[in-house]
Image (cartoon, rainbow, N blue to C red; front, side, top):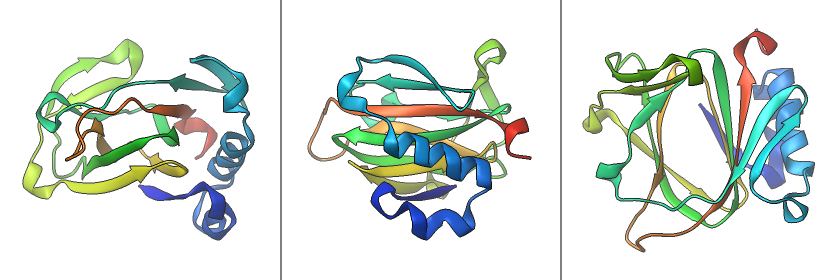
Length: 157
């Protein structure tokens, strides 16, 4: 997993695979203010722009993907945290939707890290990075605006 501030993207580029770097630049330059929530194509990848609500941690599931890398970008709002765990710590799938490349995993919360995620932050989740998005914190429920870009693993390897 790689996370950072989109305003300082250039500082991360040496760490990023070239195509992921291109995708992040495309996300940074996208005019989110001029589009409604929906699906958009960028660089041959699908990007969902959505306005979800945060939820209590116990209502959120630890998820992962096999065929896609998730690039998540917080357009507006404060997702107090995203839980992160490796697939090596939680390899057991408890629910799967292969057609959507969406797998939910048993969690070992004592091994889960919390990543603070607020406006302008991005995260790149590789198939080895399980994540629990949209967790609310002390401030309670918040409506966000965020983008999730699905990058086929084949485009990066």
